[in-house]
Image (cartoon, rainbow, N blue to C red):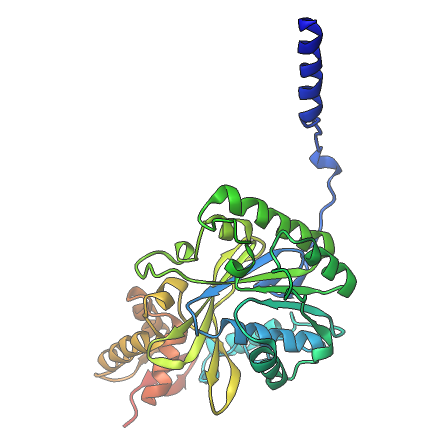
Length: 361
């Protein structure tokens, strides 16, 4: 009798254990990554956009939604260009050529449906007015009604909504509002299954899933560790972006890439957000994520570049190539150097095959 019970227990245990299945990589087909916005937001993957409250994360995402619902390019053709750059040298001409090439990476597509879920803002008094201000086609923006039962990342309604609407982008704003009351966002073993489920949905239906999150208050920490909760949030995402405000220019906000698993990290892009003119993309911005979070804005870098130029040109003109070499030794990037040059009104003169910079008389 005892032997039969032991054999029965072994049989039950064997049934509960997963069957071994091996995948031979030779049978796996190579797939190309498709992009909603290269290299920041891939289709079929999870992207996290995080930043301190009030920095413009939601406003920026609603602008992206508006463009998608109208089938328009998300960034304007000159958004990869700092609008203050003047073309007065060979290197600037190369930059202008790259700008044109970058613009070609954006393609017009048919308008698409988007699912946008918010756990913080009112639909009628906040979200709809912002969508209308951005020019969105609101017939293509869907919201899952969770008034009777709060929506979570593990909720079956999320998949049902993606299937029914054929949404190409799903936004959960903020992450912590959709974890569920029993989930501890600081515990990796509780976050990992949720992020796995979201990643599976994104890949299964080839939609871009965007999770918006707040930053913690660790002002001295690295950007990768300032997201709220477990590091597994960022580990599971294929792209992570940080939105922050420039200390010396409070109306300017910058989007920085802090993780990019599928493409080279994109250059920081800035947008202006003010009461009079609303939202406007500015272009590339010379700042890193850690500099952005630590309050080291472009103003400080430009001041350093100005001081350098005034000193090196005090005794007369100098070849641009030599100036750029000396600036590089001090950690001053070419774009920052050119911005400082413009603000100082420094003249450019071509002598033979070289450009020379000199202070205006």
